[in-house]
Image 1 (cartoon, one colour):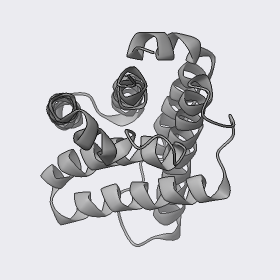
Image 2 (cartoon, one colour):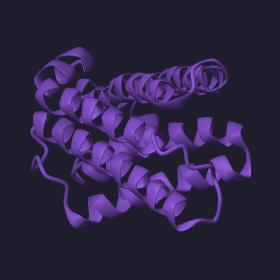
Image 3 (cartoon, helix red, strand yellow):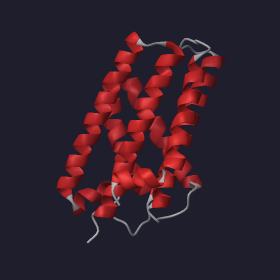
Length: 193
């Protein structure tokens, strides 16, 4: 199944999830709380984390289900894996902002394996063993898209601020993120002989 077919079959899940996450993230910016060790800021950050984790887990489970590989709802282990990946990407941003690019790329590679089934060894890093060129090209495409998103977010931070900037940023992140995840989920499926 191609990426576009997978996106077409699951649009009833990923489109509302992207729009809802965009709304949540934009609303979390409205109080204009500056980053500090305050209770309000910590609660807003945790709400943002919960929105991202829920969005990624629901979209990944929808992709898996559309490929006939499992349930539509994430298991507890999958929720935990998405939470850990999200925290790892967030932690990489605290070390150096550019580390988000490889961290998100690795997360995109790992998510299909987390949501896959053991018999499909081509998901995740197994793709590099079965189709190395495809894996390398897909990784380079993912790195380029994530780097472009990173740069766009940086520019939005300078020129478009507030809830409007947050909404535009998260809408673009959601759309491109859904495309990247769908590509990683769909690729091993096409690789079968």
